[in-house]
Amino acid sequence: MDSEAELLARARRYSFRARMDSKSQRGEIAGPVFVSGQGSEVEDVTGKRWLDFNSGQMCAALGHNHPTVTAAIREACDTLIHAHSSYFNVQEIRLAERLARVMPEGLEKSLFLQSGSDANEAAGSLTFAGWHKEHGPLPSGSQAIVAPYCYRCPLRQTFPACNYACLDTSFELIDAQSTGRPAAVLTEPLFSAGGVIEPPPGWLKRLQELCSARGMLLILDEEQTGLGKLGTMFACDAEGVVPDMITVAKHFGGGISISAVTTSAAIEEKVVESGFINTHSHSNDPLACAAGIASLDVIEGEDMPAKARAIGDRFKGHLGALAQRYEQIGDVRGRGLLLGIELVEDRHSRKPAYALGQAVYRYCFERGLIFSQRRQGSVLRFVPPMTTSEAQLDRAAQLLDDAFTAALQGKVKA
Ligand SMILES: Cc1ncc(COP(=O)(O)O)c(C=O)c1O
Image (cartoon, rainbow, N blue to C red; front, side, top):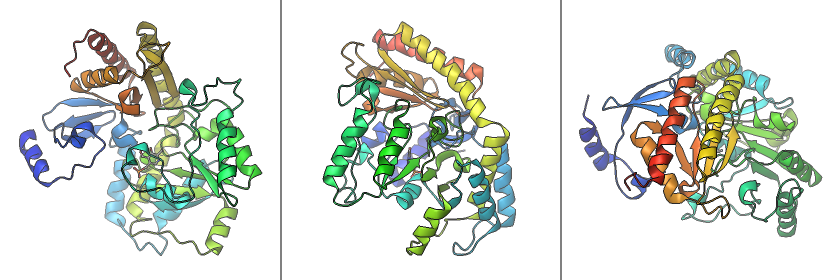
């Protein structure tokens, strides 16, 4: 195989660098260069093995190369990889039926697409991702709501005394700024990329009431939170809320790119009547749909929600123990396979500890633990695949412990 240096030289010449990675943003191209993976580990071309607490790009939550998924892909390769997207194919129909079975009651009509963005666009056409700030304006008519970020409440309130002041404020602004009845609210039920922000209990229910009162739909982006990852099939199940639409992506394809927007028969009827068409060249490819079916087989057959709960409880326990030792861990949050810690200079000021986040991240990364940084590095997010063993969880926690000690002693190179 080509050496890492040779591969990187070719990447420098031929690869576009627009990636969410600090080195790439500084114009550098550097290793690791990954070549293989199994379960919770990936290997780079130098033979170094990495513990992947980012589940790839969040899409390997079932574990890398899950054998049920790879077998389904192999079979699809021998049967039909791609089909005409205007006609039905067997795998697509099977997947739609399977997805309806795991969705909350009443959500049974699925449209398949390729990525999470596609599915959100089909459902509601927007993004408020902060890192798109150098780009043009958002689609007109879209507004943000105040984040239910209790650790740093933008309204300086405290739950439960606040009585969801963030939602009341958001809807006061929406009512004041909209001329007609706004169509929908599209939200994650737990904000992953935003910094593993967990809304307080009851927030989703109240949000749904506020939407219903205005005839607005509630659309949940469960791409990071759904399909077993948080310990229930969907995050909204834990809140007893059935939204009007759910989007799924990420590990839905077990590593293959496929997403879906699923809604009720009544909404589908209305949308189709109005002439809505949404299709792409690869919308319903049998190969991707077969991977989706296999992934649902794994999620249900191996009880992913239970595995997610067990992993989440053990690792959150470790993170809680670290927070007892390090004052700079201001908050421990998340559940199941989506956890985070927020680093602060001290617990009183809650000033974000960006440099410490970088140092802890760098220490762990150099030693083969992959996770991601959010909120400019002050939140460390952990998304271990469901294949992660207790020993791997304990190893990651030990590495984090060593990283905090080294970073706080100024022993991590900048
Ligand atoms: C919650 C959420 N929605 C949508 C997306 C976009 O998905 P994709 O990158 O597959 O287009 C992401 C990507 O990280 C996400 O985290």
